[in-house]
Image (cartoon, rainbow, N blue to C red):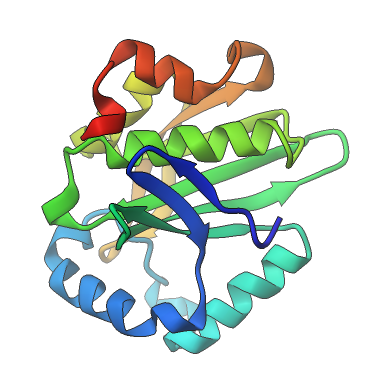
Length: 200
């Protein structure tokens, strides 16, 4: 699972590596205000220490080797423009994972994240062998709500105080898909709903 590389038109998912350090830092600094309302943060009483980029990548790749996570870079026309992570992979009778993502503000609205999410879901339902994937979104996050709407995710619940974000515990709407709800590939569904999405 660790080395999966998933292309779709001008959008590609590839594994996050230590070589991404400089562009990752540049993008995160440039998008700090843009991402602050959506990025998970440790609560004050958690005593969690900020991790360096090398430590973050090591932890993600360790989880990937153990089958618990898939940490991807989102590329558009060969440029690093964001991240997508398949997190909290549960095997056994659940065969479940959650997916989170972020994108550079200058690349928002170009159809990149819907394509990336569709690729990730197809990969999860195909080679990874999962049965269900979930995306949790703050009710105020109109951009992300449009992403799951485009892809036909089903709203399955509302989670009060789901994640600590920007200084407080924030509610989230929960959207999910099961393998049975996707006929063929989710990428095909996206291309049918937006014929030019892969060309954006």
